[in-house]
Image (tube, rainbow, N blue to C red):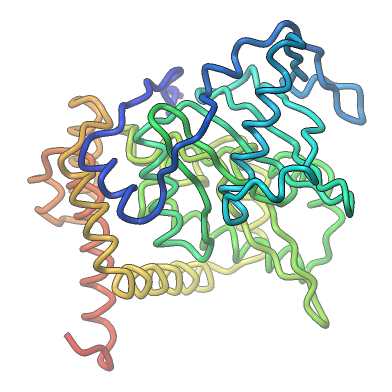
Length: 352
């Protein structure tokens, strides 16, 4: 089968319109350190998991003359992202580790920041700023059940850690031990996650690009799937890339879903998720319009992929607006309009 996902996606620069949007909504800061500064490490040590396997992360170290300045800047970054940005917090913070990922498009740094008063710690991720990823993060914040905290300065992107069990680890180590009831809950969530990714055109949700979030309720465990990688926001031309069900890394989850859910239930959950997404889009309409206006004036995918995707969605829906789309922003706008329009038409209690 032809490969669904491009081997290497280019990074797209932040446009003036997108930068103005980020500044307006408090997504930009002035920081004393850049992604490229962290690349000046002197050496690295491979990190292995508890099974002795290479994690594709390395722990990096810096020359003594640079380390103090780098650590101080990282503490300031933490204070800006999670507090009021003042220096009063800095004496109580320690940078336990700086790790570098050798795999994937973004090649992030992972910084472990610990509060020495109570030993609690949190991770920050520092990456090269990419317009595709920023659109993905912002759309996740507006259209999903999850809030996203991130900051941008020039060519550097800072993201907070999204907690959960990595999807590939969960499928390998936990799924088989789940009860039948839990499997039905997980299948329901996978159907909803699959539909949400497709409607908002978030691609490449292979099992290592999302996490399973478990919340203990009084008589059950609630499962939620959260995306953690947003590089493939509205980039690929093949519509199947935007449906996690077609990615082989998710086959175990797909097969389980087909086993434990009836087709009628699957269709019900799809409708539920489209309705929830439409409600979020309507409630966030002003801010969503602002970011979509930026995206419609931006270039985040080559023309060939745009043409392939818009014609694929036109054939799937019959909506001529896809066919008339000129860029990925307009394709996504057509997808959101299609879902919102159907939601309003199907709900007699909605004031149109």
